[in-house]
Image (cartoon, rainbow, N blue to C red; front, side, top):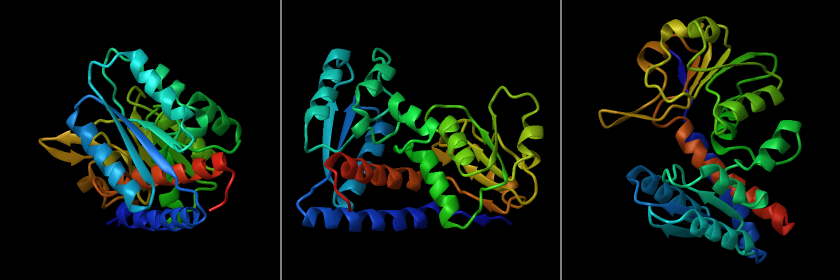
Length: 284
């Protein structure tokens, strides 16, 4: 049976580190702040935002919520982003996704100042990451790398397969693994004979959004399996990996919930700290 990669435990350790550094900055007169923009009343989005705000306040960050109606115009939303960009008290800006269909999501994300882009989605930050310059990485792949590092799972020289090609998880995940000296293959939902590709993996990261996509037949015995999927099935949260069949085959495996999810929020706080220190030219 694969050993469990406990994201909750690791997230607590990361948050404790962030809390200590935020406290030291506050003692020196530097109070960091995270601003979150929430558009509409999407129940899941509202839940995620409350969780992020609670965590921010817990680690000592000031938290600002900008709540806008679902029918807000794009110009009004962009004006709110501009206001937060110009506010010297704000260190990180997050726009909760998804946005209503009448809003150009890319335009909004690109409007956030790269120096305050805590999600790491801005093209400037993506480009800096691509060429190896200092920047913040998207929170979920950064959390996966932190999980592997803290558990002592060596990436260098191993074959990693990433299933998924989104700008939020799949692509940056592959880049982070490559930077850590893994040999990386990117697969996706249209890859022919997906199982033949995933069985090559020493480290398998799955981020597609299809419940139960990966079964035991997809996994080489002894592989490390990281399930980034977050799906609702009959009111229950489940991943992209069929945990029951894959766990006996894997050496390590993440559960859903309790695996990667808590690390995503923890890395959001870490990114706020990183950007705040860089923008204010201070060290924690």
